[in-house]
Length: 287
Image 1 (cartoon, rainbow, N blue to C red):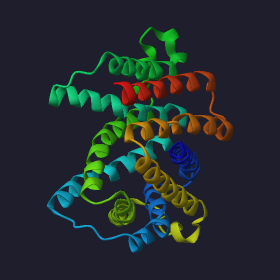
Image 2: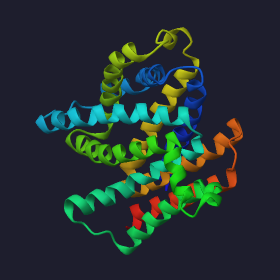
Image 3: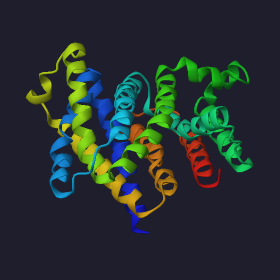
């Protein structure tokens, strides 16, 4: 069961990273944070390449990468924009919709019909989204659902979840063409390289990356740690088990946001996040 410890470690790094990134985003723009976070992850990840054999990079690898990298950059920027604009408790839980979207695309594109348990998992995720905004119920029965689309961060994270439902498949395809360790060491520098021109054009204080790098170094270390723990855990157990545990980052970030930023309505936020997490587990393990 040592894989469980590594999967929980990945969840902890992910949850803490989101909460600390929100702190930095109160004073700095998201483009600088995105670039700085990925740049400072490199000293922890790039050395991996010196200790593993170089795989053959065929046309499937490059074709997949051309689609995967831009989508991942879009997800990174929307993720940061979401936690910058809205409470973490109303953003992070919406990552739970990734497996929901995967079930939906499987049905629409491949004609795959979800099992009853899979459908039950979807209902749990939707119920959790309802509970997150249940304070709006006095405006009408469907007001909590309407409130989701009134919260900018929630909408952005729904888009992030949709992007993740695609990138998770593409990322697995790239790893199968190479290896998990190569992917960790190679992909982080690629994303950082692609973020440089975006940050130069969009950022208002890009020089701060190296002038006051303190919290960015921590975020970089957390990103590297999350990837490292993720890779170890997923190499020990089926991906569905690992991802189910990793999604506990939803609960971790909700609790930390309450403790650090005093985000209110903690009871309904925890219940809502818990329901959404339960839905993820049901979909991934039983759906």
